[in-house]
Amino acid sequence: MWKNKVHYYLRFILGMTRSELLGLLSLFIFLLLADIFSRWMEYQSRQQVMDSFQPTYWTQTLIEMEKSNQASYRFEKRKFSSSYTRTQPTRFQSRFPTHDFKKEIKPAWKIDINQADSLAWIALPGIGPAFAKRILAYREKLGGFHRAAQLKEVYGLDTLWVNEHITQFQVGKGVFRYLYINKADWKEFRHPYLPYRQANLVLNYRKQHGAFQHWEDLKKVQQLDEAVWQKLSPYLSFEP
Image (cartoon, rainbow, N blue to C red; front, side, top):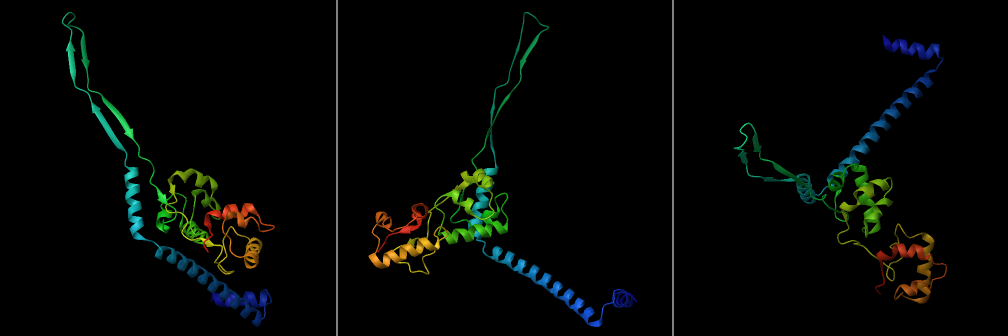
């Protein structure tokens, strides 16, 4: 019954033709399928993040968190003593036991930003699966963090949040992938800190003058932006 009413309203009230009705129905089906596909892709993305978890590191992290959250209390109990005055029987002096309450708070648990997996990042307040995935992806592009402040470069990560938790971050072994300036070809000469023009200048200079021996040789390249290469220096290797 309701189908006939809808058909009558669309066909005669709005004046839509049969082909227009079929087009409208096709558009509705397309939008529905697009929504289903989008939800499915989001689900697959979350599953990939969950599959990348490393339970061993996460177990160790949980133990450290549990230890840091348990505050240790120490009580020092005084001896009970009571005294009576003989000269004035109406007065009563008594000392009751007292406790000295001291609370020792252990420092926050540490996280190695070059080894932490997704679960370890998600354990931090304000970090969800999306941010954890971005941090791991950026760490891989860099070749490792050489200082904790580089976390501010992760897209969308709040600078205030990084400053608040920066004492918890450790770089561990630091950089794990270097840019071999004398070996890398064009495909390998890529880094988030390295613009295309600067990479092209260095590769052309190396082709004409040979390998770089040290940092001073790199400065001989004309139009070299030294600020860029200073930022990149922890990742450079001058091995022949």
